[in-house]
Image 1 (cartoon, rainbow, N blue to C red):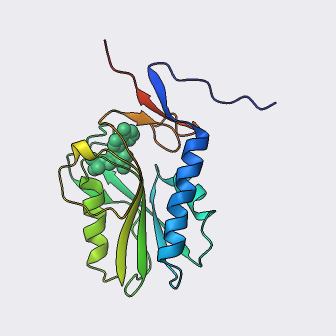
Image 2 (image 1 turned 180 degrees about the vertical axis):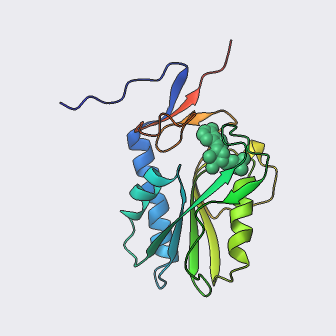
Length: 182
Ligand code: IMP
């Protein structure tokens, strides 16, 4: 029997595997419907979105393409990225006239996604939408229109299902939230 990763101290489970699976399938179904007559390009933002994206695309039954992009903050270890952002792995192809869907793991202040959105918008895609698994709405600092969102979560630090703490815990099959300090 394979041993599953054990519980991480200081974190409580927020969404278990089944709950995530169900919600990801629902998001994919909505994309399947909305893009039924299109061939979208899904732009996966590394690294955090890799597991979400892998599960999402396996529920898609429309023809689509995938590309990957990395955005780095100069404050890499601070989740509240307030500093300069830089495209590390920029798109090597044109996206003009394409229906682009940005695939993100989590939106916090919204600064990262806002930066990505505007860097892509100037390349004149036919349409540009966002799918995020998690949304910390309370901490939003910039206006963003998110068409597909998995879960609205409280303004607490989360790990697992691709999300890390200092590079660790991306492999957890569930999403766990930092326990409040007493
Ligand atoms: P934003 O620019 O403030 O929206 O931050 C978004 C980025 O911060 C995400 O792409 C994550 O890399 C990181 N982040 C924000 N909140 C969390 C969290 O709770 N856990 C892990 N990473 C987070």
